[in-house]
Length: 380
Image (tube, rainbow, N blue to C red; front, side):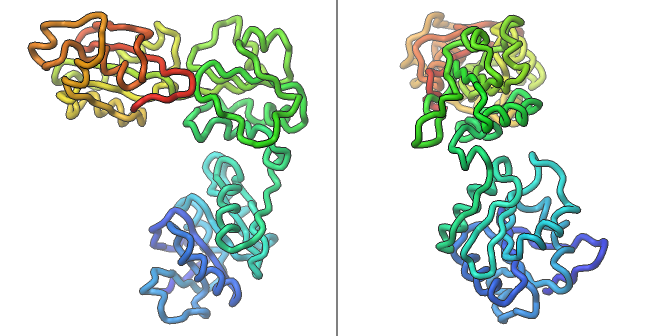
């Protein structure tokens, strides 16, 4: 089947992989066919006049008319686009479909001789910088990266801690804080919890970036920008650090939970939110929810984990009984075979011996809260 591109219409494509390779020249098609075989998870598109006859068997999609009309279909479908097209042409063709750096796919351009692979769009958030390096490695080409933080080998503020799963509290200050970093203005870094190995480069940290033990120490230094990594809700006294700062949430909180059969997701979520608010912890820092194997099909627990994208971990009674707990219960043992559920489940999952909250009973739910050791090395 050949895709006929028409003005004003979004063409029907068959998306199988995460990436799309597009070529429009004879040499580009040769390169694209080779790259398609060697780059897993990619779909290939090229002009029908270069058809070889094996396209259907290889899952290659052919098109006629201007490639420009293919982009409205590719844009929302793929994580990244690998375009063997001139850079100037690409800039003009993608302009009408640009939306937002948080949603646009990563775009890389390969020259017709396969000598350079250029990261064009969504270098950080869309992954174009890494994609350019991967494609260049396959082709034996040179990756061209122009993002300031990559060139200067400093902190990419929009990607800080992403490989660990850290989340921004808000992206409002990403741009001004990034400017402070790349312009080598004084920037404070406070990492209260989460992984230690957050520095991404082999070269030393630039002197403009200083690591502080607490937010209070950082405030005292009066930096131009700040990166704060913590599971805590900041106090009013600490909040000024965010006037030109970004707050990141590391995945360090483990919730241990037991509940009566049939407890609703709404009640479970309400107890979790209420408990974390009492502890002044952020729900964005939850790493996992842990319970007993008996509850692995509990609909309310499953729904809550699905809503927040949390791993759902369960343990056998024997595993739970192997953990020393402060509040063993003969009643719980009678019904479950374990002397406790929320308390030992939280300890096992977080890899700790002590809990932030040993156990709290609320309605149909029992909850315990653990904080993973500095470095995020638990067992979810």
